Length: 84
Image (cartoon, rainbow, N blue to C red; front, top):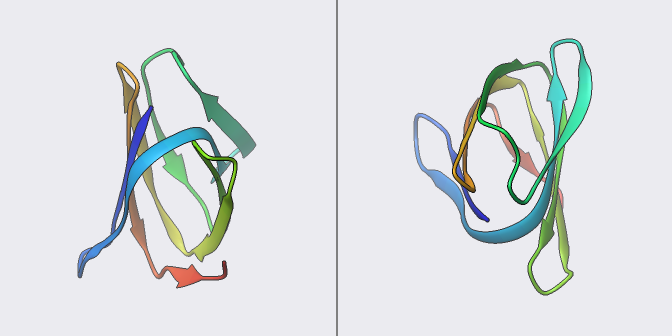
């Protein structure tokens, strides 16, 4: 599935992933291929990506939103601190 991560200032990530774990306001949840459509608010916490090649990437966000539709995942976030 394709993931795009945007802040008000710039694009943080745009590429293919197999998994996205995000800090929802009611707890962490994970998006996998062919996930049902969803729009959800995100709280402060760690976002974990598993890229198609198996590499992992994590970063911290202050808050934001996630939208999933037809294997297209959009993260609109504030205050990104990239870790790895």
